[in-house]
Amino acid sequence: MPRTQIEDRFQRFVLDLPDADIDGPTTSEQATLKRLELLSTRFDMRSLPRLPSVLPQLLRTLKSEDAAGGQLAKLVGRDPLMVGEVMRVTSSVYYRSAQPITSLQQAVVLLGQDGLRQVLTQHVMKPILQANAGALGHAAGVRLWDHAERCAHACAWLGKNSGCDSFEAYLAGIICRTGTGAVVRLLDQLIADVSVPLSPGFLDSCARLAGRLSLQAAQHWELPARVIEAMADGQDPASPPTTALGKALSAADLLAMAQLLAEHDRVAADLDLSQGDGDPFAPALLTRCQQDLRRHFTQAKTTG
Image (cartoon, rainbow, N blue to C red):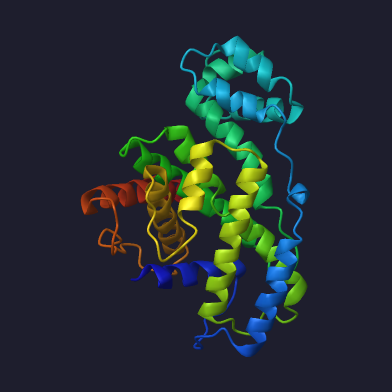
């Protein structure tokens, strides 16, 4: 199945839209796209949920293998919401220890650096991706977060096999479709009847606009340079990514879309994506990553 077809099915799944047998964009869709472009130029990045002010310092500290638990706990302790999330996660069945957790430092040590990175990333990004409202956005936020989790998992997996920093790869996967939520909110202002079929060409234009907004959000939040570079690397669909992280992100995005669609019976569960045109990864590596996604998330869905 071509990537364009998977992307179209994913867009319709996120927006809860019917299939369409028109190519488009139609005349009315072209007018909507012009208004959408105009609204997007006025979109205030400051309207996005804030990043904790301590996050950049935490990310820098977490890049050091020698970061002490006390030092990390002190930084986390400066943001009450982060404290609550760390304590909540470490109190879960997965992390439950023989002795009760009585301090933030204990919780941070129990999580470890990788666990803390993921908790912080999810704490920051989940509210942003789920902050959608209105007719089109009713289910979009949940579905975007589901994709983000799978994309981050796959990007970290592929990045590890191509020399990327594992946390930067995970972060890139989490944030790569942040702009889609903004486009959902803008579309909700422009489209009165969501039951009218939207053409693949229209949705493709919306996806490209969402990609630009995702990049602007990453720049606004001053995320790591390689994450921003990877997102910029994938802006032109006619030009394959050239950076190691950009290649991992592009492949992970596709695998995550297919995985989520398969979980909801929108594509075949055994869809083979290892033979994509111009894919920089060996087919065997993509197959293993796809199998890892199925094992991790299908099992989580079954037991959740």
